[in-house]
Amino acid sequence: MDNLEVKGRWNELKGKVKQAHGDLTDDDLKWEDGKDDEFYGRMQTKLGKTRDEFVHWLKSL
Image (cartoon, rainbow, N blue to C red; front, side, top):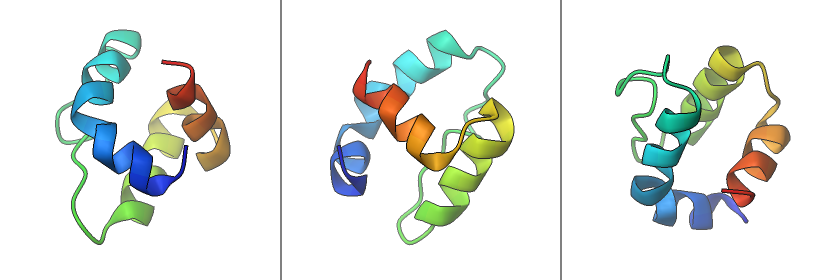
């Protein structure tokens, strides 16, 4: 799953991510155009996963 796939499915995946990690806020899960690195940085900080680990985890959802 590449960045474009994740972005395309993000509304669907966002609910599953929030179920798995209830401490994430809507602001944490906000994906803005052109700010992909910022988004992945937030996920790395909040979840303690690398970008690749996070993307791999998303594939399993």
